[in-house]
Image (cartoon, rainbow, N blue to C red; front, side, top):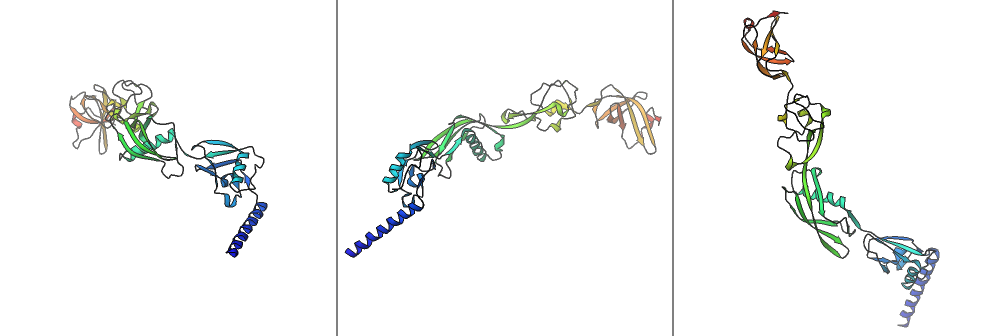
Length: 327
């Protein structure tokens, strides 16, 4: 029994000698600033080279996402009491302790809500959703040790009004907390509008057009979404700026008006005949309209080529019906 006691005492002495030697070679050094994710700050958090005493608790951490100051002398005193006898202040007066947290700012929270709504409604592009948070914190502080600090449990979204209520769970320091978010989310579409008013007969130029985002529920059926659909066409009526446009508001430019005098061209192998006629319809380029020969009064269909110019396309020559001139 005495022999075993002597061996144990000798072992402790050797361990103490080893510790003293280690401290002499690599003495513990107090850090001026500490970053921790735990609710407890240990000797090893405060001191480098803390050795076997590194896991000894010294203080409770500040709240998540905040910082606190502690006197260096108090740190050294508690560290020595915990067994790190070589602990000192190393010339410091205070030590700053930062407690980490997963911070979810309001803008980030808005994006998380947008993606969650889109995931639960197939076919909706998240970028098309205009989300406005009404009931929501400016910032959420969650436990950084948790993989998914914010979980969406239930989503109620009325597509007509856009109003939503979302039940969530937040991972906090001592478990979880329930959090209710509410707001509005509208699916938006980009529609083409006029940057400036157009009068009837004005031809649309690309610089006349602009794009406006509008809630899909408020966008009229048949609204123009591609500027190319109306560029180069003319307004049927006076159209105000900054209003949704419809393809029905525009038509191809009228090159021949009803009652206009036009030149009719008839092409046949080896010969081109022309005559003068009166247009009986309005026509844009490529339209087929009726024209009446000014002398024979015969009515024939003709294709509008350009302003004041039409051509007759038929399998049977109608030379006799035209007051023709050979060119």
